[in-house]
Image (tube, rainbow, N blue to C red; front, top):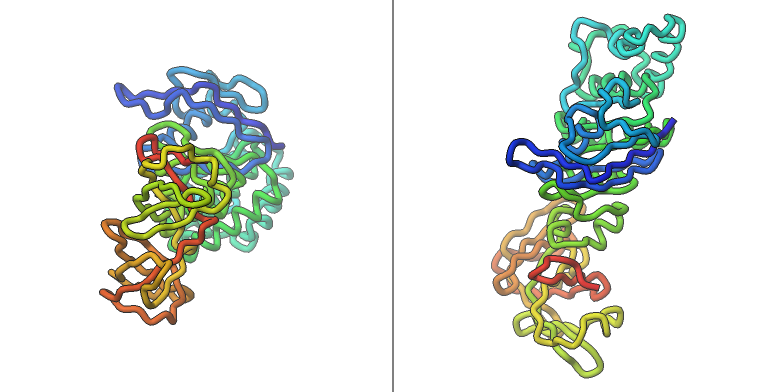
Length: 363
């Protein structure tokens, strides 16, 4: 059964360091929420506050409507999966999965049935008689997940569970976790610094910085409509490109001046930027929303190729525009060389504008 999680003004300090700053957060029942951010942003501390592994300095934690702020982890109706697999090496897979049920004095018949059910769900039923040393990293991680969900918790908390796996295994386990959540529907809070994991797994993403949530939204919105320069520069592979631009009045509307290049803003921006046409703004645009022309030309932003990286299905170019460096995704067959002068066309509808002082997105 899934449960709602609510944090009210939760604050956690370690001496003079404030790890979580008066955080308000609601995780909907049955939701898969990802806490995303760089190291030291407070995401793991937030998870540990939900779990009861850290005592909050201020604020309240609610799970399924109950105030659990003062309750130990065992009484919160939660299960955790950690970065390290934390499986018992001297026990078989079956005994590892059954450990929590045995500690609760669950009848043997029910333990056997539930262990078999969860093993089949995670596709490890044929491994039940093996020991952890006989398993691959991905299989051990499945055992750790199975041990958590066999308890039928109201809330499943996962702290970077895939970070010890190689790239191919991470790809496979992401798909497994998504399928698993769809089938069991448990409220899940997942901590990661890997934004690819966050975008692929989360129903919503809470992007954290310095103990605060700077944006909480769907993966599509966080990627396409970042609320701040930090979010735009953190999300995406490669992250969003930034160009210094001057707002200027043009016949029939507003435009942007980037060096000697002028760009007309699409109608959606007209009337939303005020009348201060001397403003300096930061223009953001994704690598895939820039079209590359092998030759400079009229109406094209002039650039110089610095590095060309073939990536199979695409080619990633690092280009210099004035003092700014951009990453551009293009056709792998486009013949360009370092030092070559090229032209760029920006997709107007995909332009994002930010205030350089507040770092917040405009309009």
